[in-house]
Length: 326
Image 1 (cartoon, helix red, strand yellow):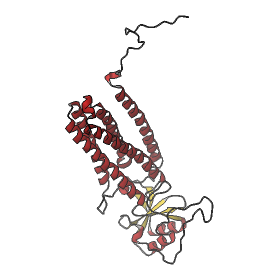
Image 2 (image 1 turned 90 degrees about the vertical axis):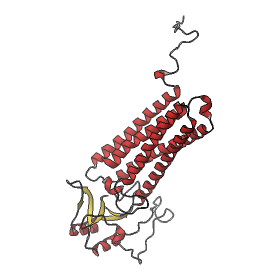
Image 3 (image 1 turned 30 degrees about the vertical axis):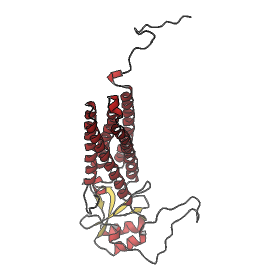
Image 4 (image 1 turned 90 degrees about the horizontal axis):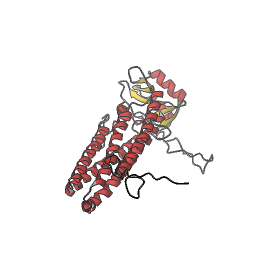
């Protein structure tokens, strides 16, 4: 049996297509392949979030009421700090563009400066996201979970949120002990006990006539439904199950548990990408300082890490839109 070899015009080779498809180096092509695959992953996560939100549209938390905190300032500042985080990340993308452009001109000094600014922007964003997570987990107002799993929040007669600490006091004579695996049922380990019991909240509610219950159901006006005084007290006594403070993967004081699940997962996944990008940028930054790319007469590595950084910034635009704006 004879084998036919196609003559490609290159002596001794059966493939003469070159090593730069689309006029891009192998490293840049692999970076693009990674970006496309990662974009599909984020698309799946955001699509799942969208479907879940559509299913529970009548009880989904309102972002303007959840993300209202600013470090070192007390008050209600909806979306201010999240907007600041977004601005910082976008500006870090601008400095990365300037670093890549400086690399094309083999300007080591400017590449060093702009890479440093990009790293600072990334660190500020990651730190801000960690602070936001801590605030989200800790909570601010507290709520009551019903036997059906719904969340009951508290407002005054003007519709402003009221924290549990504003009308509830701890009964010093009550003795509460968290369940532990070593005591009682096997494999039953209760988390940190809330500050108040349901009975203490009901007692405080009865003593304050200006406090009402607000359910997680959103009415036609786009606001959560506020019950009358009688309806509020009846619902607390008949269906009050547990006090909820902050958010975790099981329950949260803001509304549907799925909201916290998606928030932790998607923003955490993106935060991991940003943190990874910062680490990579630091490595490239030190290589720039050591003159590695200057000796090569090529700053393509800065361009490749720049592609990843721009992708991370673009993904945040979609995450920001889905979670905070829509």
